[in-house]
Image: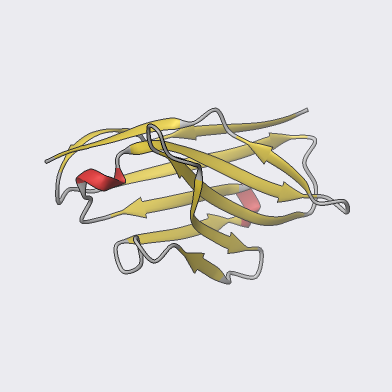
Length: 117
């Protein structure tokens, strides 16, 4: 059983910052990619940022220059530093981990981020 435990969401004013964390535990081996997705009300879930084991990163255009993804491989933990937050960043943020030989995708329960304008 794999568990992804997210933390760090909350309410912040526009222009503020939040840091999300996601720790993977359980029977999880050979993590390939760790990522953050988000889903706003009435919208599809979208990729926010992803990072490979070697440290290669990928960001959605809407967050480039404001968000930074990082990971601690020893702790199987991924972080998302979110700066200069905007109202349009309001969403439920989900942690995603792809692991194993057959590339199984695991999801966290989601954490709410609300940015007030």
